[in-house]
Length: 532
Image (cartoon, rainbow, N blue to C red; front, top):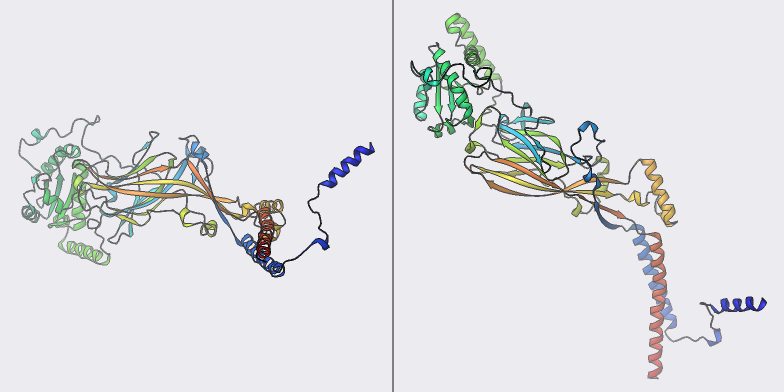
């Protein structure tokens, strides 16, 4: 028993990595002393550099993983969706905020549609979208209401909507044509306007279905008109295209009132029934004092004209026809799959003239997901520029100079998660970090608990491309924003160097410098002996 324990003890003693050489067997070379000083100096410099790098250095890291939120079930109602997170996302959805300015298209002629690859079709979005009329400088001027669906315009048809209550045009024309032809060019048009104090003119196109529905009622309106100073007229814009362009006719039918040869107010947008259009004529005559000639004293008529002129003088003129632009502001929730937002020149009661639809626009704002939270901007500034591709389309102007053109845009959206340093255990400072990685991690957890910071925030990067598309002459152009939301999420952040990595590097510096310079000393000593 004792012999076995003795052998084990001697075996352990044979494992000795720190054997000592007797002093009387040691020798020194001529370079030993200066080389030792240089070794100590080099170690000190390298250790200082490594320590400063450890205390102040950060490492940028990047990881890519599947965005599991993108796999959530689509099509849920908004009431059943969970709360929105920092990146502006619901389960399987993402918010798109936009602000577009169409510089040459009235708000009445603009609608927004949404399509995606799941077959979702939201025509004429009506919620969370506002329209604003703009001035010549593109600034918001007049509120045009929400993007609500256009109300149906009533016509004089029977309850089934098929037969016109006034009969056919052939029947109405048996005793002559009562809606006068105001076509024949600019000179003829202006001459006919001056022949009457009032002229209610229908600018139409024979192929327009709405014009065809209106035509019998318009003829009946002319037939029933008994006012000697009022004419009911019409202009065929296919025959007088130049005249209609000069008048700024963008859609058919356009019903416009003229007073003493000048356009009065805005175009008529009410019901296209004989009774409603007759009431409109009476309203214009009352507004301009025309009715007073027949039923009021001349003195009262002059007073009305004077008051009307003073009102016009005090009000800053806003000519919508010269600046028919529209600003559309709002947001929409979309499924996190490829889709497109389509802005179209269209309304529900007119056919638009394709060559007059100018889709030149400015993208004032386009974001996918909410903007970076204000409390995280200090972290966001520290991210390298390669991860800051936000709102890349904001402020861009896209002009089309020719007819039948519009821009189509493609946007690629990349979900990104920025990891803050706090979650890596640096919140308690360098002192605790150097005490060990475990304490450092605990300090980070404690800091997150106290501050309520989850250690990261999410946002969405964007890249885009744009192309001008040419449309057929019979197609009304649209501008589109096609989008594709990446199913992968980029995790990016900055981490402090590991404490244990720092310890390993310190050991490597000490051992490496000593070993290398020891080899140098032996090499120089060996060469010196051979030369001697």
